[in-house]
Length: 256
Image (cartoon, rainbow, N blue to C red):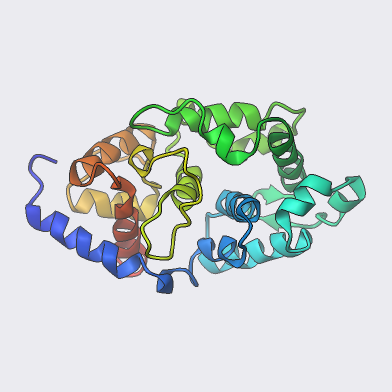
């Protein structure tokens, strides 16, 4: 970062403004939780859609709406009040390797979290450090799989302790925590600061970050995320992950 041209920061700031606006929502998975107003509906729908947010974006959004339909478009009510018969309606759901077995466990685990811990925000607010949510993600995974679980489902929740960049969970946390009046992220979680967030690192943001000198490591893993986070914090320590809009937008929409 010491060698980063100041013009790069100026360029990235311009790209943040370009993509961090409501026009971004329609073609992004965040469009699913934007259907809702109840805090718990927003966070549950956001968590579920972020879980399946890999692959073709059109398919992700289509399957996200299907998930919501299967829960009667009332995700919190479904999570809290479902019975085994209700879970049968999930049969046949599939998004890549995430299927009805995984979906059913997620519903049960979410009810356990809301019933015993106070909800998703409470769990993710534990094990934080001053500059990182990554230990909190590991803690969340431990809590999420505290019920008897299908072994196949473990792979659908990333763990930074295992070297993962945890892209999808970091994206979910960005949605819940950032509040900048631009209308994209929700900012409904007050117990986590935007300064603690990590960038949702994927192939698009990683490639752009390397091209502009923010990342040297070739793999998109936990070590790469640590390097990227450090550099983004040097550009804006209070809101480092706003640059996700720039890195992702340049990679996906502008083929930078």
